Image 1: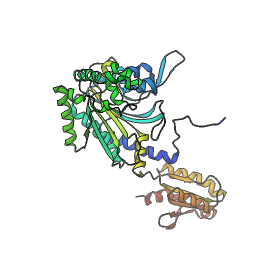
Image 2: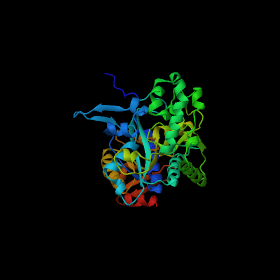
Image 3: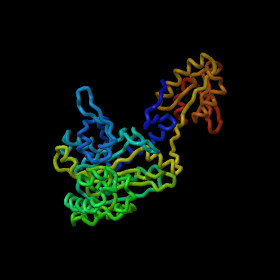
Image 4: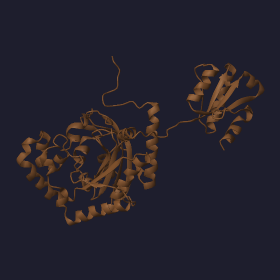
Length: 423
């Protein structure tokens, strides 16, 4: 049997995990500043959560979900995105009754989609996302966008482009929907089967088609911005005004519809403009989804959020040649010579760790020269050299690796004196 990883998944090895941990810590740091709290939902949900929440005309539901029946005959799906599950939890746990509104939540965890693996895209991938539920204030739209940009900028990315659009309210979308049907219907036979199916069900999704995006009718399709009623225009204008106040550059793209059915009003994407990043430039996408809470049986509750792929973020860092400072310096490495010293080092090593320092030693019986090389590879700040002579004298040799300075320290007071070296 050939043992290998499933297609579209990846092993994240220790040398790469440090990058992931750096990003995860940065995400937690930023969400804390914005007062978003973590929510953890199950990795699998009842399939209906996604068919109702994401939309049965979307590619995710029609083509990409990992769905199966459990032993009880229930339809189960590995979560392909985070918003539907968060909203399900919001309704089920009656978070709308919390006096602190809006509920500002974030999630970070694995998602699953059956799609063609490519650079920065996997069948199991990790998404970070935020959801703000309970506010119709356009200022929170700007806040959510600013938070997403903060994540990328904190990692050092510079080649970023923010694209925004408005899909309007229900009234605006009904008017636009009919205009799209009238526009595409005479030539719909020239489009792919997916677009033909979407014409009557959800014509807005035709604008998001990757197969027919070069068709001439795409460029001449009626813009949603032409059908916004006064209320929707005013809302979108406020969002843009707040972005201006925050000195956030953006482009308005009337063709930006996103790939999920639940969006309305503000939609946005953050893209990488770095050369060599690839044909798919989107890093992050999100928008407002007023009506989704009601779809799950909750009270009328507006919401907005976004999701970004950690894998795509890392790919963007590589495209811009950015290396994060993920150094994992070791405070102390104990070099031993002889069985008695090796035995004693177990107790000494534990004492140093209990004092709050990172410490290690050799476990493969290497010679003293090889142990010193190991300490150097591990970027140890200090090395303790311990042999039978040192034990007989009740001392250890302490060497600072950067300067080469070496001195004797009494074993009985070693931890105390070593602590002083870091003060």
